[in-house]
Image (cartoon, rainbow, N blue to C red; front, side, top):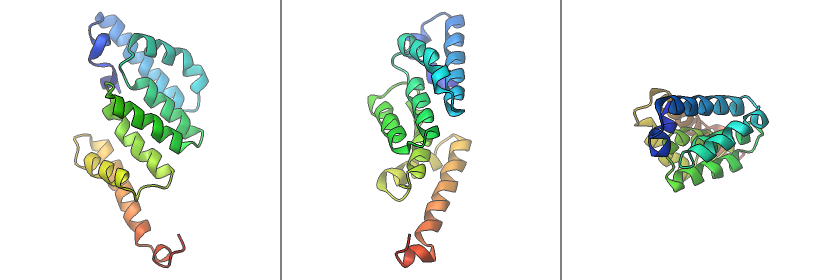
Length: 151
């Protein structure tokens, strides 16, 4: 996630401030992923103020929404970050794929495009995730229950 705060105004800050911003982003993302979004709120507010063109706060918000069982809202948040072209939004693509999977929408064109893009990308962890989700979607599509229209 350190790549989230590269570039933009934060990149021109002195090295200690960039390191602090990266640490804040890491802490906020970790807290949101663990269900502590309220505790991360001050960090996210600071990130929004100091690095408004970065996707870290959006990604943290999406992680919190996923923890709260809101995959559709998480997907919307991530789509907005990607559409806005925020720096570091590339990190949002695998999370968007997870949100679509959690919402039961791996069979759509959006998920298919993400699966292909991520599976052929440079990030080994994201590639493995995409491959597993693609295999899961294929298995579900060809399950006997689904072929009988029961799924």
